[in-house]
Amino acid sequence: MPDEWEKTHGLDANNSEDRNKFGKDGYTMLEQYLNGIKQGI
Image (tube, rainbow, N blue to C red; front, side, top):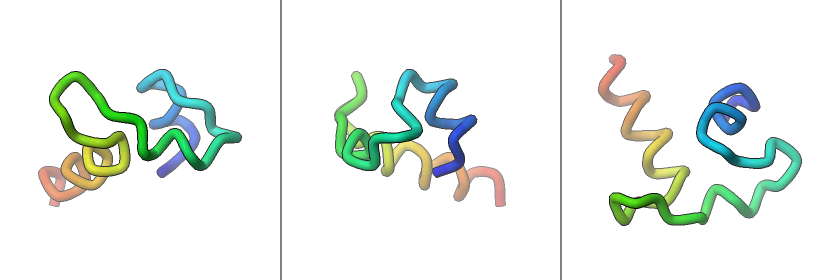
């Protein structure tokens, strides 16, 4: 994930483990990022 995306979503760009943090929708932050890329294609 780009650092800017992480900052926008309240993540720490220096902590690779926060990709596994769950959002309010039940998806991990990595899943949310990947789903966002897919929608943009």
